[in-house]
Image (cartoon, rainbow, N blue to C red; front, side):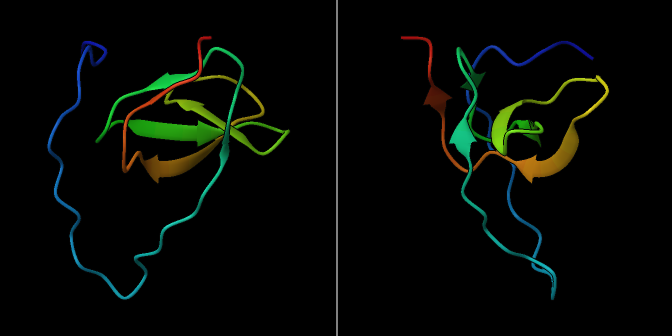
Length: 68
């Protein structure tokens, strides 16, 4: 699957476990609305990626650009 290059509409599916958490953005993080995000050991989020030390956090509610 190709990486996102723009925001996408991913409706939230109602669930008894639905919740919204807020995280700080990792340095140079760019996340598009609707994309999957992960949280690093510092508690900051970044776009979804496979790496050790990251925890899946869910989908990004709004676009974030922390590049500068």
